[in-house]
Amino acid sequence: MLAILLFFGAHWFLSLFFHSFFLHRYASHKMYHISKNWERIFYVSTWFIQGSSFLVPRAYGVMHRMHHVYSDTEKDPHSPHFFKDVYQMMKSTIVIFRGFLTGKNLPEAQFTKDYLPVWDKLDKFGHHALTRAVFMAGYVAFYYYFAPNAWWYLLLPIHFLMGPIQGAVVNWCGHKYGYSNFNNGDHSKNSSPWGILLMGELFQNNHHYAKDDANFAKKWFEFDLTFFVMRGLNAVGIIRLIPAVLPVAALVPVNAEPAIHG
Image 1 (cartoon, rainbow, N blue to C red):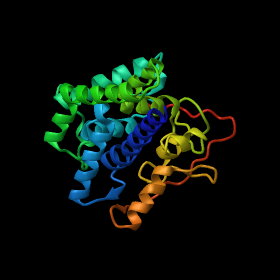
Image 2 (cartoon, rainbow, N blue to C red; image 1 turned 90 degrees about the vertical axis):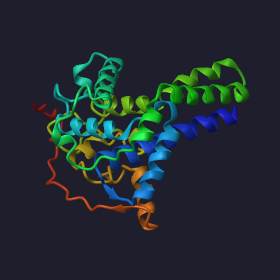
Image 3 (cartoon, rainbow, N blue to C red; image 1 turned 120 degrees about the vertical axis):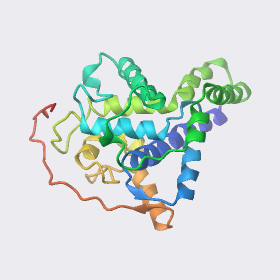
Image 4 (cartoon, one colour; image 1 turned 45 degrees about the vertical axis):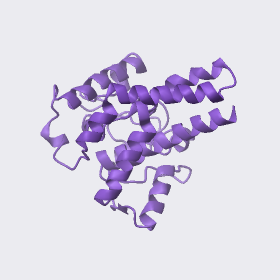
């Protein structure tokens, strides 16, 4: 049982870290500079840790940039306010994601003009159905040898879809539940302590207020674990954080509901 719990915990938090650190804060927002060699190391790490649920960085980056520009409008690729449930939201997101990968739907130039990490060979290999199947078989084999009984197999679907599940939690909950520090003109919210447990990703209101700031925590009781790790990587010279120019604060009046722009 201990082996399963350790495996699940490691997969969850490592996947979440590379999702936040590499896909979100680098591929989408370029919050830090990094050498080409280190970029490749983190690229491979993201693929290996996400495994069967690998999210191709360039497609993720484009979609996330769209999410900021069109936040909580009908053009937002994953706003929870235009879908009846989280399943429908993610189903629509997957269609858009695949469209970018296949070239069936080309993104607007404004979402690709800034740097997006691309590694064609790894993208094709990691996104291939056979590669994903091999990872899934590996997860099943681990549970076969270490799970005390068949009930533990219920965790396997989470392993299979780890990246999209984490994205669904952040995009659904981060725009529906919690509190707002800033009036961003959308429904973005912060959640504590879940924002801490999700390594800063559920401080969505803070992030939409200052999208280029690597630190998603803005209040004394908020803690962004991913940023804490990034500070360590910056201190040893692996990355170089880019200082963010913060906008003028727009505090939300008490009991006021943010307006939707569009």
